[in-house]
Image (cartoon, rainbow, N blue to C red; front, side, top):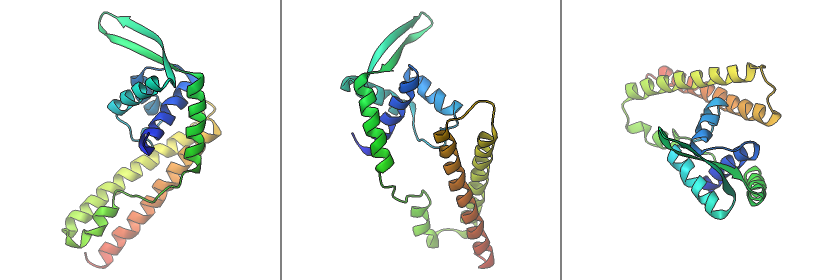
Length: 182
């Protein structure tokens, strides 16, 4: 499996570790836990990875729910082999090097050819999006309704720190554009 698939497999196996799920429910859990901002997934990727994990024997069908008004709903559970694979993937992910990629890097490489007002407008829009995400993470971190596992709190805190740094960098970048009259 490629690195991206390993991450998706880790996510699916991790969620199945604690509860049996249908592939669509994975997306719902991500949204409920505010993880959708930290993990890039689409429903097609989730279904594909469920299929691959099932073929490997890492997960198995627990039940198929029949409803005359909807397509059958297949609910999966993790197998003993899947629990072992989960531990392997978890270890791999904790040990993995994390290269520094940023979606703005390719644009910055060629910014000298761009229309300056367009760049400024796009960066202000990006700043608003980052600030909104930061506010959302602040709310998640402030919630004390139910006990949050320490690892989830660290995940949220890491996301918060990245967004905070991004916001500071954007402010510096925009200030420099203004000072240079770009």
